[in-house]
Length: 593
Image 1 (cartoon, rainbow, N blue to C red):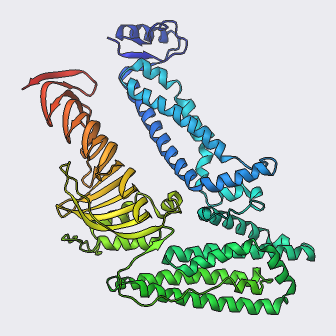
Image 2: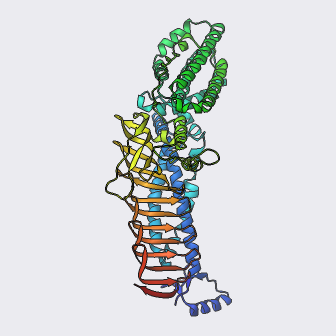
Image 3: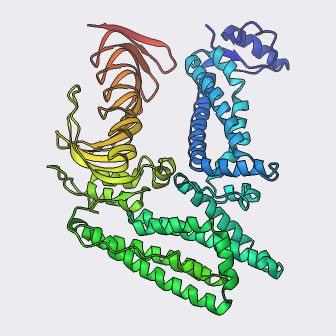
């Protein structure tokens, strides 16, 4: 019986078969003692070594692919814009085209997935495993050397440094649907202008006026970005939106600004107008404070300390920006004053809090966390020492499925983000309990859930559940997941394709607080098809499932290595059961009724 594998290159003795037995080993050892080189290994050890290497490589490639894809998707729009500009100016000098590198990486990922699938199929065939191992180093080097630079996308200055030569002349997108892209480009232009400020000041006086106009444009863009922060924090302020529109419109009116610039006085008048702007912005802050407090219903007033803290942080940002304005905008004119219009204070009302924004905001995510700690329908959540429910505790520790940046980067900005009641959902054709009333925070289209969003509700078993999904015409569709808290106050999490019945369908994952997990096929939220179940002890079961129970042929692997292959029906062992040692030697077999 073959127990060894030949690893010697161009070995004549094992040209036909690289596997050999103990007798051949004795002959090889004799030749080695005579000085003939020969490399070999035990088949079992070799399989373990190669398997461990490939599992680690597959995991590394999955992590890198996920990270690179996330980083690129969040910056794809600005990268494509700047690369179009690089092409328009007649070349890509000092610019690395990241989109081309991403295309190469996607091609590599496709090929690597095929190799990974081949590894799964031949993990028990040492000859095929040996052939596959020949390409291991090449794939590993590609990941660590050829594509490693793509991970630098997470560095704050990478895009600025890589596309610096394209930023200055890159046209600003003006479509309402390109607001996020416009903000990114304006931030890059402001940074570029700030770096070149000293050289601009040393140029002839005639160019100082040109620089002053450009600085004015940058300031307008900067104000737009800052006022967008008002919208994200306080949502629904028509006055803030009007300011942004005026800022955008003012950028196209360069000729009017030039005439104003020519008529104004120099330093004394500029300083006076800057002070007027400071006063107006301070008044705006007070107006925003008042409007926010008037909009909050009585049940949310205990959050006022958190609101005050967010406003104080906003004030600090504005004051810091204004301090820079004193030195950078000595040519500020009366035109800037027209950019500030205070929104009217809404009349006090006793209506329930209703929020409509263009972006997801941290304030509203915090409000959703706060809601998890309060009674809903007849469910009263148990709270920990910090006053947090199990669901709040999970989110604070593990995070949302998509963080705030990812939500705003992925979301279609043409769909408003709203806080709405959830009407519940019956599930008549399943064994799962119906969903009761709750709340929805996310994107909408014509008043219906559509886009990215979250539903928090309870079910008819009086247990809470949180859905984080993509929605279409009011129901979940596509990628998503849900977390529910059981009667023992323990969490369970599902990830995969969530369908209109609010349950997983197709391939998905599940894990719970006790350390159990599953990866495989689902039907109506239950394990159904092929999948692998992992136990906290370290053991696992891989095989068939039906209605959440082991069914068909399966393999149970103990934590210390021995394994069993047998038949299962309705979760119980039936028929022929074969027990193997961790070395793969058949130890016993039995037939069960």
